[in-house]
Length: 106
Image 1 (cartoon, one colour):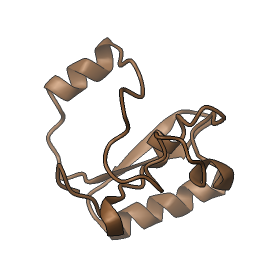
Image 2: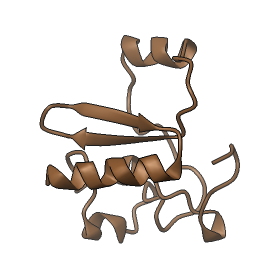
Image 3: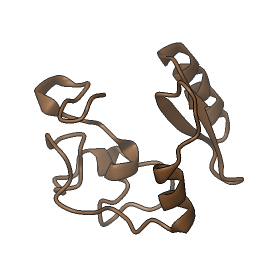
Image 4: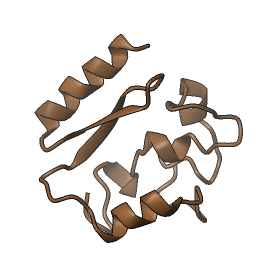
């Protein structure tokens, strides 16, 4: 996804992590109800970016943004939320493999 663009129709950028900031949502994923919310933070139904910050990054996150690891990754999936395991993929095929792995963890 390029800056200013979106993969979906109508300028939607369906980001589950952002949808998780809907006031009733908690945890790693977003429920069907969350994804249908009219919240201004629900990027599944509202085009463009959310109206403001969705979090306050810590020092490690800022350092990672300033000096990212070298690699071809385009996607990330929290494959094991209980253990906090996040894996990265460079292709859509790899991404869907990680999604299947995630579904094994509930």
